[in-house]
Amino acid sequence: MPVARGLEDSGVELLLSTRLDLASLSDHCKQPINGHHSRTVRTTNDRAISAELVLLCTGQIPNTALLREFAPETIHESTGYARVNRAMQLLPIPAKSNPCVNSCMADLVAHQLNVLDLSEEEIEPTPYERIFVVGDAADAFGAIKAGYNAYYQAEIAARNILRLVSNSTPSSDVKLEEYEPSVPMIKVSIGLVSSYVLSEIVLSHNFYRRGRFSKVTK
Image (cartoon, rainbow, N blue to C red; front, side, top):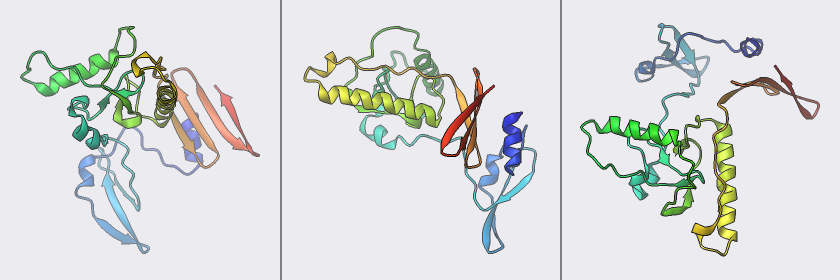
């Protein structure tokens, strides 16, 4: 595995076939080590790991409290994501026609149907045409929560904002750009000058040398 080899060459220890035991975060203790405070956590196979800094990168909940207060009908109860249309504009969730005993399950089903979005209709109109949502807060048609997706979503939103403010016609008549999620991929930085990008299509190795970027595709 070239990614694993590159990380190990940079002094990064990989722990495979296990994950962090989130319960160990609540009962951790901080102990001074060489004048610094160390935090000890455990993996699911009961390995203890001490570190001065722990960055939790799983199980995060999007911070959509402001949108929930302003327009609660746009926020999925089960995920906290804000519903958007293809132009990345804030969009109300369709009202439930029939009450469901298990409302949480109903929310999850509605969320998955929204992700599929098999229709080829035009951008769904919204009463919040001047509010755009991108990144981790957006329920963006199945796009994984990654920086490159937030970047592309922001580009779409920025261009659509410019179209709205520069057009003298009613907003409903302005042709807006539509967002389509890209192929899922992950980028792993290896040191300061190298990274790997892995997707279902290609594995590429990017590295910085003498003032320019180069790419090796496999």
